[in-house]
Length: 296
Length: 237
Image (cartoon, rainbow over all chains, first blue to last red; front, side, top):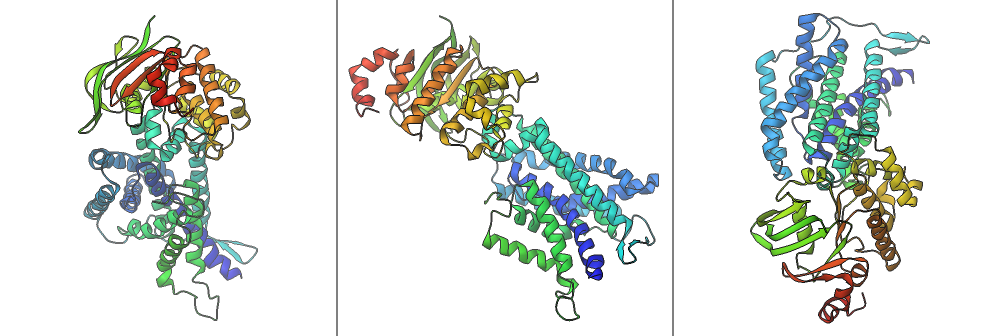
């Protein structure tokens, strides 16, 4: 039992928090700009490398540098919107999806060209976990990641329910046409959406890098579980994305527990397949997702 | 009488298709003006022309004398024109109060006094202010849509078929609300299918046919007009 908690449940919650943060950005973009943003994974990777560079320069802890990294990532994404997405505002969604696919490839190449493709890490060395009650092992970095993720999710909740721009984001997700007729500045709402998405993407990437390592494909590898989280929670629903992310992260990790016999139920190599399977099942069984999002 | 809104020989449509072939109308201070006409006459399109939702090939739209021809919708809102579309006129996943707050989006001052006035005008909304608007009945949704538009204290309110799809009981209620709103001094331009009820509360009316003005008179005169009676009022709508 204790092994289940230490090596499956806790890592599952950590991974789930990371997925949730990434999924909020994708689902908001889907709700407000109406397209699946394939470049989101590379935005995460970019946020990680910005943080890595800031660590080289300042020597500070990645968490202390995160706000600055979020801001820089937001600037990049606002620039991408201005140059690539804005001219396509009136185009069909599939054109925007393809544009984001192109941006994904471009941004990855820029990252690889600028920082190299070798494996790196934020902090060399191994951290000792806290041991509670002689058995429960929790690594300090996991505690930090989960707390920081909860704070960010609460911030998103506050933004969406208490601020004018956040409510306007939800209004525009409901009906862009009516938002325009109401006098809501839709371009401003779109920019706010990109800033929230980019900031959370940078945070998710940095948390994953704190937990594991830094490499140029890390964001792309997150894209499938994040899309699965978005669909599980309900497309366009930020709260669905939070729930979906946590569920996918936890299920991925506990699927490798030896439920039957001594061998892992699912070989760790196939973990990503679990997210994919959940996505397919949801699309067949309940395409509107757990929290009743949109069906496109 | 001073005109709040004037359309002057407006010609326009969507893309290549012309729908309005020269429509002129005016709404004076304090008036309810009804636009009546058969399907496809360009009633809603005329209203959208005011709101900058279609490009006009020629003609002019003036708000209190100021030329607002082809001004984009968000700017028209800022000038004090509010528009309640026929369908999709509320944000269904937002609460009633959030819908009203969005109606006041372009205001930067304290909106609470206005919110109180709107709740006084529509008591059921106060009760349900924390409820998600999409779960309300058709009549109450229409109240949210109107309340949302009124949050700005508009100089003129444009209402597109407010009673479409409502039961006769709610229809009467909506016409009541429109009269009440007008009684507070807001001029109203409305498009209506229920010609009889609309003309009964309207100071003046315009009959549009094929994108052109066909008739223009006071509400009572149009109700008494034989041609109008034959065209629209026969069925006892």
